[in-house]
Length: 90
Image 1 (tube, rainbow, N blue to C red):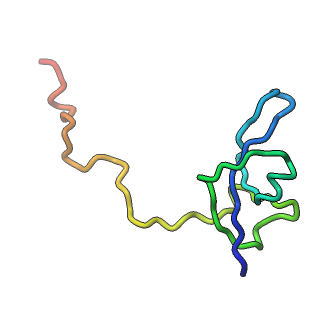
Image 2: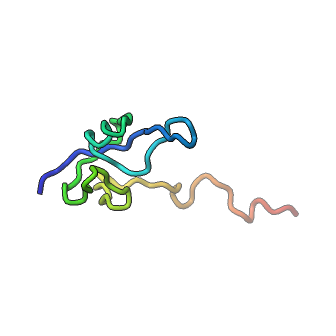
Image 3: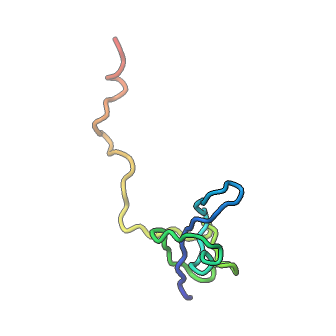
């Protein structure tokens, strides 16, 4: 079970006539063959079994990352927001 590094990349879209960012990932060699630009900050290490013959990996096939710590995305209950009742006019 070898691990391979994959990246998101930008490639030239002849229809739009400018570069666009890929939704999928690919190996460095596959990106170089397409004359693409690697986004190093998107590097992921995945099992080689999910990499296709052309060196690409669909984004939906990549397993989720392990989260180091759970982050809270909503404010805690009883936060600083006023309650709905206090906003009503008399």
